[in-house]
Amino acid sequence: MERRDYCTSLLAGGMAGMSVDLILFPLDTIKTRLQSPQGFSKSGGFRGIYAGVPSTAIGSFPNAAAFFVTYETVKCLLHSGSSPYLSPLTHMAAASVGEMVACLIRVPSEVIKQRTQVSMSSTTYQMFASTLRQEGIRGLYRGYKSTVLREIPFSLVQFPLWEFLKDLWSCKQNRPLDSWQSAVCGAFAGGFAAAVTTPLDVVKTRIMLAKAGSSTASGNVLLALSDVWRTHGLTGLFAGIVPRMTAISLGGFIFLGAYDKVRSVLM
View (cartoon, helix red, strand yellow):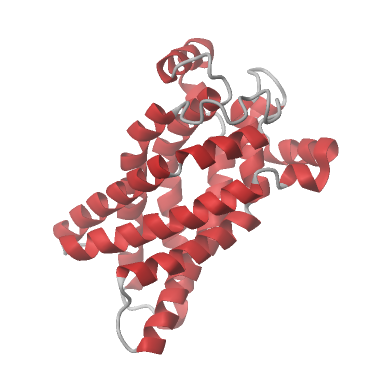
């Protein structure tokens, strides 16, 4: 990938990520509180829905930029000489590698954000300092494995579906898509991927919010899944599905549409 393409992907991805994270932050707070082991009301209900937003503001640009730079780089490398029939596999592989890299930035930001969302008595800085003091750097990366295990299946569904829908629509109208059309494809792909990966999102939230030293805090995804299933059943596994689907559908529209628009302008 050329230097210009690299910089374009970095700027377009970062701007798209920051836009969607800040615009849809209230929905994310509601989703987190619905999934919290304390319950929605005790976690704050509809009060203070911007609690934790500084963590998101700081982490969203580098997180999204890291994902798209990696995604476009791997996609470019794998596309060289490959059959068009392998495109879905190429997109899956590129998205998976992109998520693993982006999660190195996303997880610490997510840990602080979610803990602040369910504990409004602490500011973002206080929560950051408290986490470092009590758990060290490992505390900031609690839930890394569960986040990656959530994001990879999500990306395996979202990005190949997004690319497929764009190709299909483009083929039907015999010209490249406009940015708003790419955004519509992103909304559909994101909403569908969000629905099928909600149980993994619930588990990720439980692990990040668990008390230090508890069995859930160990990060065992299967243990956390079985615990939610045993105590809350299917309803617990899909807690927060409506705000999650709504946020990610809107997020897919803004995120992928903005990415395509900014990238086309910069190119």
